[in-house]
Image 1 (cartoon, one colour):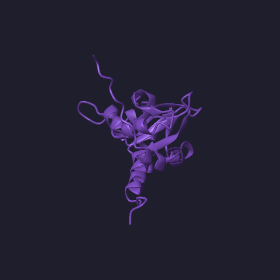
Image 2: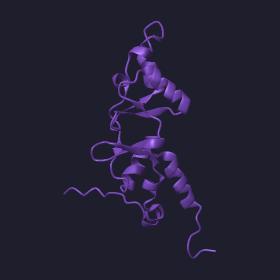
Image 3: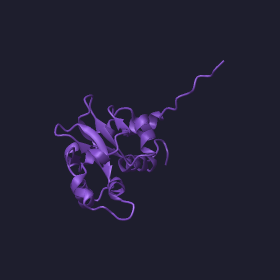
Image 4: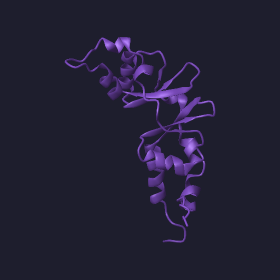
Length: 158
């Protein structure tokens, strides 16, 4: 007889502490650096360099999320066998190089899933049901909340 796999649950105290703060702590789409489908790699590299991020979302003109692009992906795309092919920066489009297989979040109330995914991701893109980009939840935000929880006084203690 097979045993049912127990699904780990987040402690009630921690869940209560966070409340709805994940959605409130989300960095909204308007504040997130991004590039659009159709932009060339030169533009994407410029945005990445100027904003200082290692990875940014790729959106279409309706703000729908299509992928992620990084400086490492761009560098890989322009590396030739014997030289760096800089001319490709103006020729290749972000959609030819971007990563399309990555975790996304539609439900910001599923904290357990968010915590699990953030172990391996620096941030998670938040979208609605039609994949319209709403913003990001970063590992940094979660760690700040965990730190606040760890250092908060326990009720009934001196």
